[in-house]
Length: 97
Image (cartoon, rainbow, N blue to C red; front, side):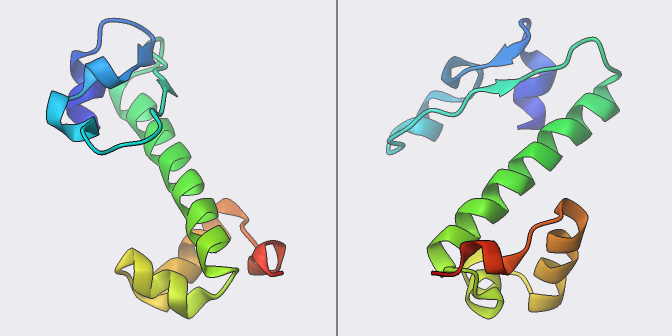
């Protein structure tokens, strides 16, 4: 991700911004807005936060809001996952059936 942000010459990351083998088995392509008007560190932080937020929402959708299962699937502790939930204002009840 960092490499693509640094090397991209446009304002949008596309699949072509990444190594070709990265998307061989991917079904959908993600497009992320690059905020080139910001300093690199701040632009990188925005991209990472956006990714983490999307990842957590997908994780909780699959785990139906179960923190322990989500943490296990993500390869992190339940405590780390709870910290990310607080950081991004994500509530597990929004994903329960």
